[in-house]
Image 1 (tube, helix red, strand yellow):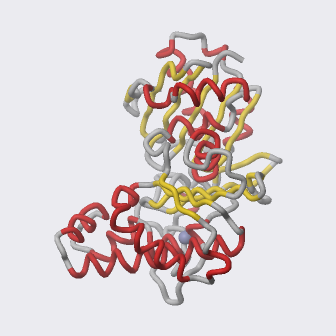
Image 2 (image 1 turned 30 degrees about the horizontal axis):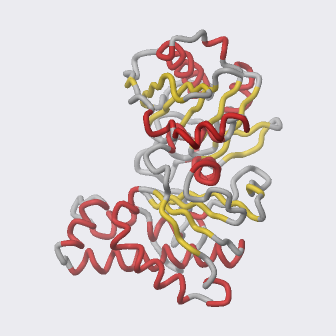
Length: 336
Ligand SMILES: [Zn+2]
């Protein structure tokens, strides 16, 4: 195995990169295609891997192993993982404002990619980020760790006793959709009062209103804006309660935190810690928090970590090849 392909499927764009034992060789991205039949996105993934090969100056036939980090959830159909994410599938997004322009109720990602490649590993972005952080980042070597991204949404992946937990459909732990409050606001998933609906960047922006982004709200916080302070405090408190809940279930040692909200960690972390350690102390006192070390690199490293052969890992760790990955070539949506 000389070359590997890593793919990152988000709600708005898809990135493909090629790596070998000594780093990344080529990388391209394109807006996610949401019009066409249900095989549109698997075909786009194949196209982008081929284009990344072209950038890397290798023959696409050299690629037989692909690691995919994708938005989720999944459903198992025909023994394969289908992506049933409302931000890609219009048929699942009836309560959404920005409904994708299609009627898909699922994307046959795994079975289609298996038609192109010998080995295909697919996990959601939270789970694959957890694998990356445990292999190369802030969770290195930790057997009981949870990675959580606090961003426009909430994502997570968890190891318990050194085992990556997956569940029947590969959806464990969908932390953002645990219930926190009665009569809370509605989440993009349809739930009312779940962790994402109360604490995500989207929620922080919505609570402030006036067209402000979460980033603006933190700016206002720094200027002493009372409403911003209140909103951020409430979000941090509910976020910590979500973490305390998953800690009560999994008895974790380390939380690795990433995502855009963590850019303001000087504001939120003292609040999160205060609330977290206020929860049942026998369970919470031995748990620690660390910042993600791969933030900004997970687009490549999440998918790649799912498939990287053991004998490559030491060299990748030593040289931290993710830090000198070339910037990605942006392709227009017309190109296919
Ligand atoms: Zn939800």
